Image (cartoon, rainbow, N blue to C red; front, side, top):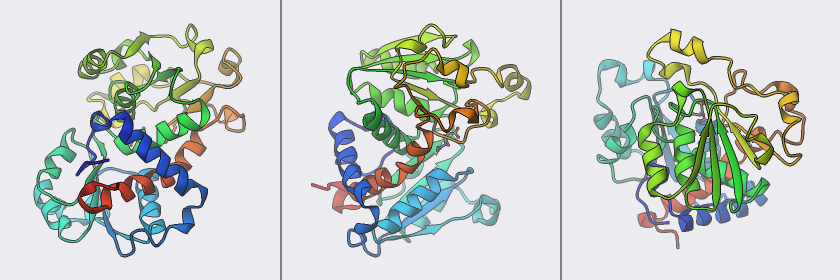
Length: 307
Ligand code: NCD
């Protein structure tokens, strides 16, 4: 992989993805055995929006590689509160760390910040934009459970504001995949994403109902309605609680269906499914550590070139 920054899934070629997944597999075998890989490396965590998994798995990954993290902490406790610009924050933090992980509510924030820094910067979510490191762990999980070629995937829920969906949809165009998108009319994929998928020759269909397509699916990727991105609470109320799955829903699915979710879930997946062999979302979250170890390993090497 030869990238200075990871900003969107669009920049990932099939070879890049395969390189990360192969390395992640090595790390997954024994995550604690690689502390000699990047001793002393410092990763800065700058999260301007809430996070549990992304932040903690990047922190775990950095520490497993022998490095450490410095954490900007809550926005309320930082100089952002005093009116500091993101560009200035980025310029300052790059002087402290060997890499930056940035989450921000504004779409395009990671790209903008990356223009001010020389250390590798990972976009850990920019508003309703992209979340490419989540995509890498999603791809790893899909590969482990269903394989990435000759795959039929359904992606359901908030396709408009869900950044994990946008990144995953782009990345899947590198593989032989049939993508089915299931959502209410008002939460369909943004036009720009649909355009990119079309340009990439992706095999894509959109539905407002899961039933018709469920039996064909190898993977069902469920997402949370992104309440915080709705300009109007009433619009959220109209779609909240739609597109839920429970044990009865799975009755019509293939026995091998892998149910995925980037988490956090609210009520999209009934907890009664958690103990079923179809539930893959906790395994998916755990895969965040070896996959982010692999990503950091590749990015932190000189010039971002690991080979
Ligand atoms: C996602 C996000 O932040 O986009 N969370 C995550 O990183 N696993 C999904 C979400 O918040 O719904």
